[in-house]
Image (cartoon, rainbow, N blue to C red; front, side, top):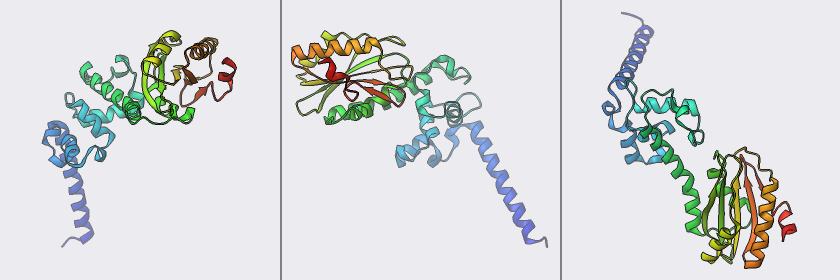
Length: 257
């Protein structure tokens, strides 16, 4: 009779070989051959999206894999390259070319889902009419959407008499280093929404929120127009990479009024 430890060792090796065989079969036959509880889509419907890993969530967006690679394995490769969902945003075709068989439709699905995620926070705040007490309150709302953009985007946050958000709108989109908002249109939009005050926000794609001469000139003109039309300009924020500049907090806004 063979020693017990030898039998146990052989049994363990047998389990390992069987596990490897099952993994290999899954790769060849695809996710449809997996047990239902292991399939990302079925798992999501049964346990909720929170129970899925990042690669499983991404696999659902991909729907199918490529030749010889399941959707889950393709999702893992994509995450290995980009590390985070944030890094996948604002990419172009050149960033995805190493994934053979991954067409424009799948890339579009991923980027659309990421954009929905970024807008979710902003929409949630707008509908809830969050009260703004400081520059940081606005920064927390817009930072996730603006910090990674490769072009300048100018937003206007309209507030009521209690400093609650009425709406957040895009005033203009620009180039990699410049967006030129029209002061008249900003004030006109605020009046149409019956806003008592506004906070203007734009990003610097360079990641450095230091204001330029154009930023200061615009802020001065906006404050002057606001005084004439009785729309309070509470702040002008510049968003960088996880940092920001506030004209109000720096004391510059007072000098322009």
